[in-house]
Amino acid sequence: MKKNFFQLNLFVGILIFLLAVALLGLGSSFMKVWFYCFAWWSFILFMDGLNFRKNKTSPLAENPWLFHSTAFFSVFIWLIFDLFNLRLENWSYHNLPPNLGERWLGYFIAFGSVVPAIKEISFYFESVLKGKKAALFQIKVSTLMLKIFFLLGLSFVFLPIFWPNLFFPLVWLCFIFLLEPLNYWLKNETLLADLEQRDWSRVWSWVLAGLVAGILWELFNFWAGTHWEYNLPYLNFGRVFQMPVLGYTGFMPFALEIFAFYHLLAGLYRKLKKRIILSTALLLIGFYIGCFYLIDAFTVVK
Image (cartoon, rainbow, N blue to C red):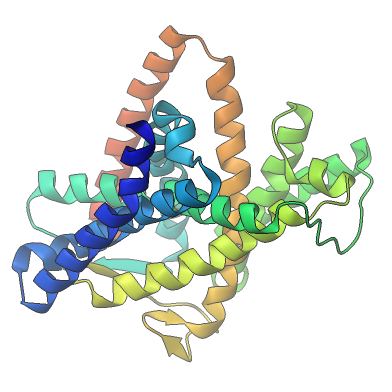
């Protein structure tokens, strides 16, 4: 019964996606607003079903509670980048619903899809590359190296804040250098440990997942009525959908940032007691409300 349930996700995802596309094509005002959310969550279901059929397991099947928690924490991770954007002004949101409740629900559902989507895609690529180390080189992790990486990460955080027009691309690199050392010190899963073993398979899986997800993000966004638009300093040319063509290179390191964020939060999640998890969830909800207000005030084009 359980096996049939997870295998069915593939067909449920396809049907929901086709229905969303059909309604969008028919000019449904509801679907113009919600197409992006329907497209991504139907794709996540499709990928989960595909992963289960290929591997007899999937991120949702392995741990449904963790999968849904991942969606909740995905909102937090994306909001970090939206906070950066208050300074960078690299993207803006257009044609959002005027009703605050509907708009904020849309933020939550859309931002909650980021990590589950990349995780599903990377899970598929990891199964394809399993047993293939695909190594470029091997590294030797040292205390000095970890400290240098961490300091680089800090500098990559502050340079875009002080000089956004020049250093804005560093936002899509900073958390690799900042969080990978933290994960290594905390004995969480980390790509640095993989590279110590000269195993690049997971690196490539997440890099490819970032590129695939990036293309789909821009494809779904292009057709949606409610969407975002970019305005990038010195890279604002050669658009494919809404994204300037060189901007697609940023999706690959962004996926590695997602990996580092995910395993840092997953490690904390495992260590926290239930009562602390509840209080943390309440604090995060307060953080989400504050960020949604700032997005409304500064990123949404009225």
